[in-house]
Amino acid sequence: MPKQKKFSVVLRSSFASFRASRRDDGFTLVETMVVVTVFVLVMSITLAVFLANVRNHRRALYEQRMVNEASYAFTKAEEEIRTGGLVTESYIDSYLSSVMEIDNFQKEVNGIRTTILLKIKVKTEENRYAEKTFQITATER
Amino acid sequence: MKLFNHTNKNQGQDGFTMLELLVTISIIVLISTVILVLGDKALRQTDFFSKNTQAVFLAKEGMEIVTDTSIRNIIRSEIELDAGWSGTGYWNVDYKGNIDPRTELDCHRKLRINSSDFYAIGEVGDEETDFSRCVVVTAVDHLSELKIKIEVLFDSREGEDHKVNLYRVFYD
Image (cartoon, rainbow over the protein chains, first blue to last red):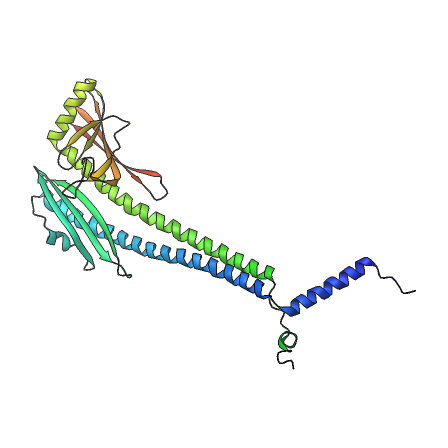
């Protein structure tokens, strides 16, 4: 009478052989396609968001630089107005670095108050423009 | 004839299981997400500081406008009319010397870009800016002392309101 194998032994050996054969077989076409599709999809989204973030970050840095330069130019302009001096577009421009372009310069005098509106822009590395508008008012003493 | 019989067994390579690949992808996604979130946070902060600087400019401008004695006199007389010798009033002012009395609740109206491109009280139809400016004037001691607070509000990218305050006391 043939020896009857225990069910657990049979199950273990068949599972082991299944695992071995699965390992040797590699992936099915469907598995590969699913994995590649998921990977490509995830990487595309990640890359797109990452690049947009980098672009925005670079623009923000340019804007920050514009703020710094405009602050300095305006401090000088305020001093000039308070002492009765004349502030022109070229006066402001002389305190800005060469990469900054003045896009709009407006000056309005209301009695003893002089208000200056300045819109400056700078070309970023992606050949786009970052721009910022500032306004100050100074009173002649 | 089996040309490619040796492929797997001879090289002794089992390859990856689906589970291993999914774990790897999950880790990549997790790391990418962390990097993106940190980058986005840095961007928001830069945007906040940039707007905050503009708000400081507008607050300084507001204070400069009320430095004008004639404008302060108008404010003083309106407080006297409304609240007697002491009291608090709210105003919108702009570079042209326009003074618009407001209440505490409706003082923070967005500044607009007027036809000359300036930030001003403006008119309906003019483009709104991200900033609102309220001048809060408190008269004390029989109007001889005016405490002035300029509040400039702006929205950040998170949709939160941020405020820049500037204070000054005028003794007349």
